Length: 296
Image (cartoon, rainbow, N blue to C red; front, side):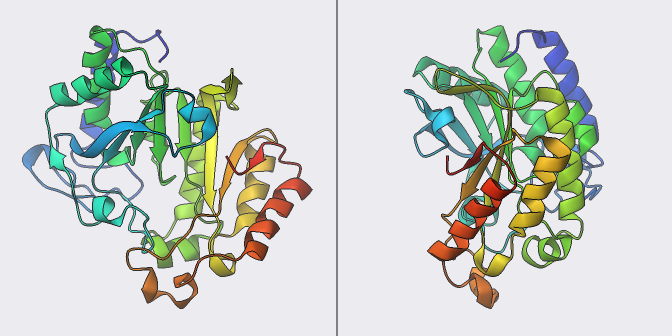
């Protein structure tokens, strides 16, 4: 984690994010939930950290895993409503428990103690105030790991600006090139537009992914899950990354889609992708000159 923010500065950022959370405008839904008064919006998050699990994870991108694993903290709830969510029980059904900020800080210090390469917050957007508050406490006790913001891509630029100097590695999904598909599959009418704004802001803050000794230290890492029948709009996604972000954008094209959650409600999502569908995505990346796009 960058040392340019003191615990006091981190606390101030956490307070500013908490102001965005009540009435809530932490994400582009702008639902207005008065979370400080106990109201819960679409994501169902309150004011306390809501955590499903944590520990070293060796299934993330190789540049995050290294020798010690990525120190993942799976957060419950989500600001998206993806029908095919691969973490459906956590994001939709709300598995997990609310803990204190001090407990979350202790988790971060534990991940560092057991040798994790980073602290990887999975689905963090709706819990940004709690996360930054926990980081402020952990930093006081010697926490120094890089912070990974492993999000769905549906982010508020206003909130992201409060994370500048806190997040070392932004790892957003870029799910859809077409917002009409985002409305159908994730319940948001403006996914592509908001994701593009967010990616621009993330890249402004941290730049292209910097890797040393096989380990990511800082920068932008984009995930794109290839869906059956071209639903993810891969060409539009990759063209945007090349033209509006950087030809050196580190892109993980993912082939592991499987029908989960409520995917059966959409006929096209009832099967895995074919080898041909994934080969097409890889070929597009090569054709477009995205030299750091592939399977990671």
